[in-house]
Image 1 (cartoon, helix red, strand yellow):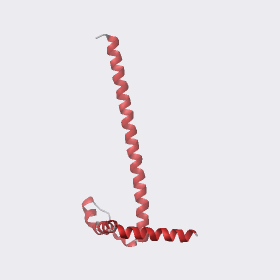
Image 2: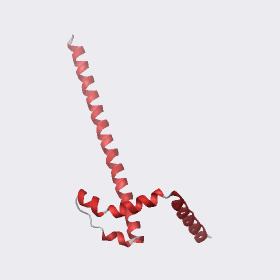
Image 3: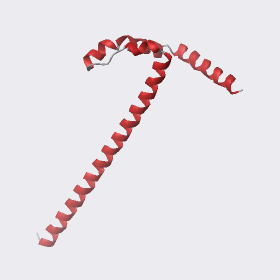
Image 4: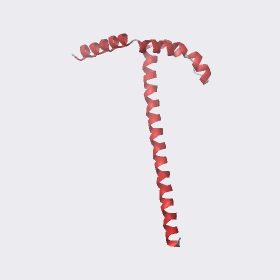
Length: 104
């Protein structure tokens, strides 16, 4: 192979490597931005839940294993609530009704 061809291949490989590195950096940046947004949303939701259900503030976070035990009652409550679509629909309808009457 000629030295010109080898140089071109080397430069092309470097360009590909650089582009791949930039792509990975962008993917990491996007993942971190999504994670930050998700954490912020979860924090806000948690504040609302704690505001209207103050009993949940009795739960104390710990290790992952401790959390599985400590938060199990809350998880079961939310699971049962989410599984009852009729109840969820009635609650959403009531919320809509209250918002509508407040805005009139």
